Image (cartoon, rainbow, N blue to C red):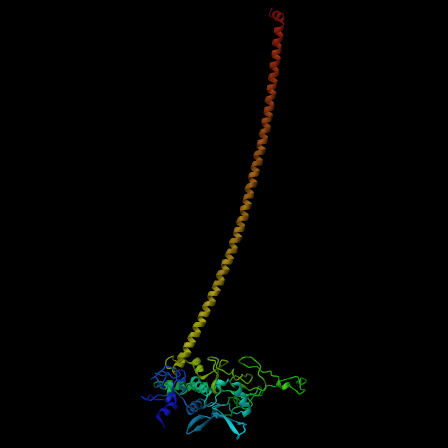
Length: 450
């Protein structure tokens, strides 16, 4: 076998750096990159700097091994098979053959899908594929198939599942922490979507695997009764046939729109069978990409891909793109510290708001008191002014009264004086009269003298 073609098919985690040998060309650079040459520790190409998934340098067998390793020891292990001691994903491929009518010998048009939802009839599987955008349908040899492969590498990094593929060697504590982390997310978060018609989710539960029973003996993920749609039996279609089966009461948990009863939807067991999604709405809530092969992680009421579930749990290095097993506790402590800091800042904000409210209340009450004092002072000033005006009026009245008495006394004195003056004048007039009489009778005067 040609060495170059062999390197192109090798998994990125196992691809050695061989001088002079290049891997698959970049799908994003469009001819600029001559072939993938991995960086010593970054998950990028040293030629063009693009990521590993941009080169699509994995193969179907590597992808099947990766998903098989992910689903092993979980309730979805029935989707894998053990081959030479290794768990391999039993990928469901679908081949559709359509006859082509022509005047010559009949021919057949064959379409091969690299992946199809398992456990479905071909009719239901084709209905599902018709709802997937054409550029994302995993038809062999098309852009849709390459999109699926790139999303497998992007959403399910192999180094998130196998610590031996991480850069450098991990300590025993880190290996143990990684094993505990993988076991926990397989039990609590990992799931594979189920395609069914609305109301029929959970009709074919995964088989019971040893070790997946609850303490009370109940099997986790068992069958659940689908809700029954109550419709009006009197409702008929225009051609007179009963049409109540065409009326859906189910809503997509992604977009909220109604889901037609004859159109397949996707169920997630971890979310419960009372929720369903359109095939185009079954996406990661973080990156918005369709969940590849319906593999999801359920965390805090959200659908996540494997990459963003791990990032929600542990910090991921921006350089090597790996999450370290020993950093989970540090990440939790950091998140706890951030949470406590946020709570502390919230308490400080609330305390500041309370103090501000109290301060504003005190200012309002002080302003009200000062207003009352101003009003009282203004009222007292008015009363004082009124009192002063009253006193002034009283003083003026008293002065007027005294002045009146004085004027009366002066009037009386003047009258008395006038009377006296008048009396004096009268006396002088009488004396004058006597003198005049004497003057007129000199003989009398002389007689008197004699």
